[in-house]
Image (cartoon, rainbow, N blue to C red; front, top):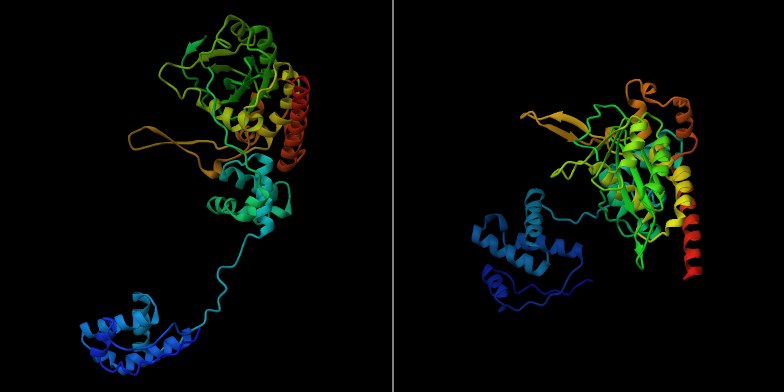
Length: 417
């Protein structure tokens, strides 16, 4: 908007002072920017600004600030520019800003990847994008493979991402708990399991199915099984199946102090397989922290909290064996600690991005991994499973199988309700 401005009465600094005090007579309104710059230049020349004292310069700056509408720092900046160059002209910005690296298609692809894998941590999602581009040759991930973790979180907050992504409530960890009270010491050797039980909730006083979660401490190789009840009649066959699914020899079995594992039946089974049984120590709440963290990150995230009747345990076991366990062991990246000693001689754990890999990749990175395999198992068999399908295809199969299973469960629940 252009203005009509009559500043003829403003000829001296006293007139300026009267104007600022609301006494002087002047008519003005907001000018166009080009005319505003020209007016400021004329005022600086009219009052011979360089020759004024400090107090008088401040008075002129107050006048320019009030009439122009600019901030104090902007008025000072324009005045300094006028004194240095002898002119004050507005320069129109022509730069369009930062060049956009990640397109809307990249953001939608990130949202689809998070949808498939259940919104993993930023580093884990970055690793999945790297694997999709480098290992499986999925060209659409070429740009996302080089994204920083910090900017990945920025893209997750964009409107495009939220237009694609479906959000679910975060999961909450659940706590469940004979042998010797001590912490296992695997010393870099696989076969030392951490085991815990997760209950799938009650409904009207009726217990739901139970999940048995076993994680190898060194490789984070994980097997999930389901059982109708945690009595020995149901639990022992499931534990036998669980131990059989691990590709390497099991040496130790560590659990909390729950009676489902600390009993003579489990001890008899483990003794038959030459597996050592240990349990968590008093006042050491982190003894079984690895498997408890997997309860939330894997079991609850994939299966939720909704009540599932106990008689669905066999179908859930088939789902775990065919879809969930292969996905988490061959396609889902995990953080692995790097231990160093501080100046006081205490071990300190770091979890660098470079050490992130799938449990199977961790197993193959061990020195001579063949020596740990069970009789009849070969690395070639495991390699074929690892590269049979991509990470995203494995996640799609997992989600489709889970959706189909849950539809069957809830359809039956509605019919019986």
